[in-house]
Length: 155
Image (cartoon, rainbow, N blue to C red; front, top):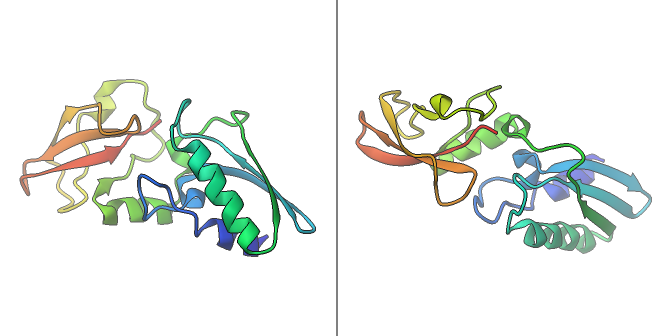
């Protein structure tokens, strides 16, 4: 199983190439039966345009290592930002995206009003718009370092 997870960690999110699908938490189940690997993936949101691409990348990575993949997209277990690993949160920050706050579901814009700046760790930040370049990101401005940044929304 560790070998399979290591292979899957090489598959990166196409929008955030420093983040593996494992660390993003979209790989929600893996079952190994001989050389057949059953993988369930849960999108970060319904209608994610990258899911078919990510599914194909998972299949290719497993095939390159001699496995017969069977990858399904499932909504059995809803994805939440709590599924992002600590390694994934660190990768988001290093990439310049503020990771979502811990254990907070996105139910009200109030929790999005401030975020910690991934560049200077400042908290004197302001939400500019909850609508970023993708549905899972919001745009902020840091008054400390005078830089704009994105935060991965808590959902």
